[in-house]
Image (cartoon, rainbow, N blue to C red; front, side, top):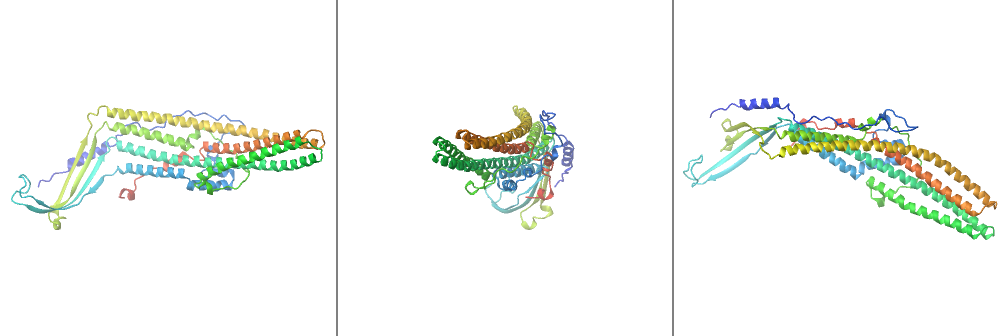
Amino acid sequence: MKYVRPFPAFLGLAACVFASGCTVGPNYHRPTAPVPAQWDVAEPWRESTPKDAVAKGEWWSVFHDDELSALEKQSLDANQTIKVSTARLEQARAAAAVQVATLFPTVSTAPLAERQRLSGNRPPGSSIPVTSAVTQNNFTLPFTVGYEVDLFGERRRSIEAAQASYQASAADLENVRLVITAELAGDYFTLRQLDTELGILNRTVEALQRGLQLVDSRHKGGVASGLDVAQEETLLNTTQTQAILLLQQRKQFEDAIAVLIGKPAPEFHLANRELNAEAPPIDAGLPSDLLERRPDVAEAERQMAVANAQIGIAKAAYYPSLNLFGTGGWQAADIAKLVNVQSTFWAVGANVAQTIFSGGQRRAQVQFAQAGYEANVASYRDTVLNAFREVQDDVTGLTVLEQARQSQQLAVDAARRTLDISTSRYAGGLVSYLDVVTAQQNLLNNEQEMAVIKGQKLVTSVLLIKALGGGWDASSLSAVQVKPKFKDVVAP
């Protein structure tokens, strides 16, 4: 048997390895986005280093509410939307690992044990002369090695896209966590706002009941008219109706919180407790830093990297592919002679494939990839613009709400003084009871408005923290990548 030197095959392999430094397609550079120099803010806002604006991770701790903190931890553990995003992150990691695995050759085997009978009437031309029927054994232990050389970087671009997609999924998970925890905090403070309004209504009902007893006794004594009694009864019943209707709203928010923490609504209840939290001071930082602090912006940026790599993958189709292969093993008719030098066989080779004509398919694929990249760039810039809008809206909202709180407190104090004066003048017979009823209604309305402003301020604080990224930082994505490890490479 003539020995065939495998030198040409190895020479081709060396040439391919040298050529593998060529990677077609554009290298990724993050496109720019319009960034304002500063926020449109007024006192007491100020700009400073944003890294210390919000605590990383458990950002809700700035409200110093133990019950809220306990609910937030439950949501992170049991919320089903977070579990969906977590599973998708694992899928993205596995998809990246699939692409990384293409860096290594494939090795396969297909052992064969066969006993066969050849017909005595078989046509001539086979390796065994036709004399009679033949029965023979065939034992084969083959191994096949294959490797596609990454001549023009298609595999490297595929790995680049998969790694960027993995990082985008990690940012998406962080964004889902931020959205869920912010929604929970917003619902919680709205529920506590309703508890405060219910407390105001219940205290007003008690005061009206005492007032009704007073007016009724005066009416029976001939001092007050039946009109005074009717007016007080009307206000009392109206206030009780408001309290009943608020219970329905409260239950809706309570049920929403139950879903967010992964519990059935009928089994979940929160005891009534009025607002006792204050909106914390929050530093909005510099607009330019917002791009590194919002997970949705980071996700959009990583999607651009994926789309950019897709252009390189599409362009690689213009160039030939090179596959190296090798087979070898043992073959014998007698199993006792299978592992024998004389039973060995082998072959090495290379296969070059090049598409010559595709009817414009490759050009269309490149155009498709380029258009996809442009779409992702526009989506990224739109996400950035919306991020600036959200922060600016919430900063402005907190400023306005703080001013409203101060003026509303003055209104509540004035309404309370009005009620005291009206009650005293009515007792002295100087005014009708209508003045007292009007003052009672006015005080109730102003106290409710104050509760709404406090609740809105807390919810707006939550929204601002969410708009600022909840203390997250995009630098954490650098660690989110699949690297080939020996235990993973040799795993089946």
